[in-house]
Image (tube, rainbow over all chains, first blue to last red; front, top):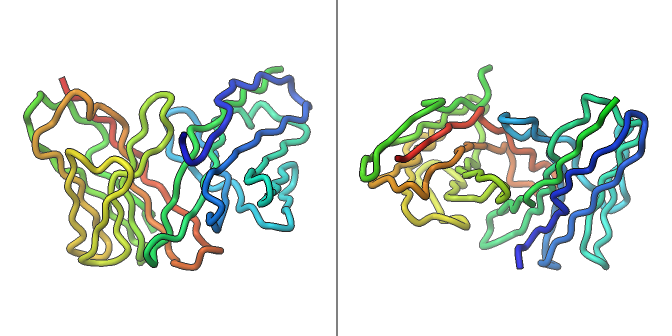
Length: 112
Length: 115
């Protein structure tokens, strides 16, 4: 079982829709969590960190549920420009280092 | 401030050939990483480095070697390329060991084809 699991999608939604992605992780010792965005044939870029108390950045809300070992990303009022692949990243402390593990990504397509 | 740069951007190799991918960052980051990305597989960590002169294996290290002789550079070597190493390779760096400030900055990628 992969350590970080995501539904690959694609999620195909109209402009203005609300869409949510989940990401589950297997190691309960995981310490930090992030969402990255990757456009086609481009490098990933940090979208937002995920804090225990939940956090919001404009139309984006991230949540962490440690008991059930998942993180979520909610996008409200979807725009065409939100079309991309969303990667969740889990950081695990190992031997004094912080090792990132990426999920396989969830593809979002926003259509007019 | 160029961020993270990768050389080359594209390369075609024949099976058995060798090559080195260069990653450079000008942000004085401690951590550097090499990933490969294949369709449907996401990003997989090949090797990483927590500082100059140190390297460690990631999830898929076989067939690759790395070196971090200078803090700003992280080299990925393929000694004898195989078709299974056809992939997009991304380098990344991060500025902090603090788990709460762990943003990774990625280079633009190297598209490698092994025939």
